Length: 351
Image (cartoon, rainbow, N blue to C red; front, side, top):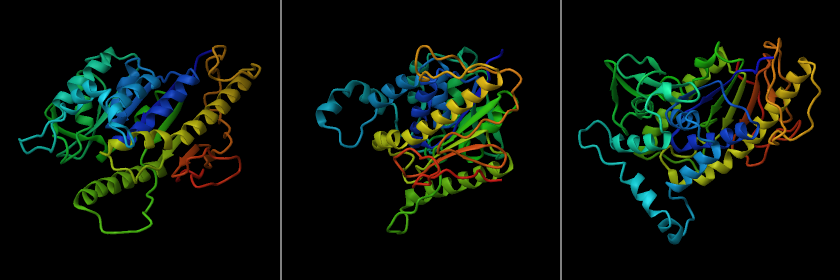
């Protein structure tokens, strides 16, 4: 009996990308190790940390140690001053006119946390997505210099300088492939895609955007349009959408809020994977296990000839006509309910 190969695609989105952390913690709780990971921008960075052997909890602790969050007291901030100063000093102005902030020092600090210099050193295969600025082509990076690839994948045009690699000028991959689940097809039995932007939620009081909001908002609009087109053509097996479009991609003071708002999606992913696990066990002729998935007794996912079998939808999980489970969590902070359609709703994937 072969274990199923689960592919994980982590979308970009700056601070919104921290919503991937509860998803990674869910995989850890279920004792599921992805066979491959593909990520864009912040998704590539978190994917690299996870692929290096870090757990979701490890990554949460790292993020909380290097960000200043809303509501923190001065004492709490000063208690982490050494780590904060180290990371804040890494983001230095770029006086070369290629971006607002240089990322060289940030990447060097990230290298210490990842502990791997090349893609080949990672415990889980990773693909980082960038975009060729001059040809507008997506560039999938999966071999060689890992840190340079991450630097390219996160190079938001105008904010961070582009990266030159193999004769190309590379920028943030979100321009062309925000959630790169398509790169996992054929390599995995089930592909889980996580979109941390989700649907646009207009503010109650609409006003003209500031210059920064207009630039970043235009970036969002382009990314969303490209992603929606791809989803209509060929959606992933499981799509998780967390509505964080109202969070600016650079507002790291909202880290705790992002992590909190990702909980419903993580809970629904857990239910979907539990249901999928049970269906696999039935296909393999094994009794269903009553224990909790995070128990030390929990068996690994099993698979035999059921590669094309359709996993049943978990409670609160919508399905499209192709059997794709869609977890769409917008602004609701509560997990989706069976048969319900609360603020963050389960919906059909676009066809």
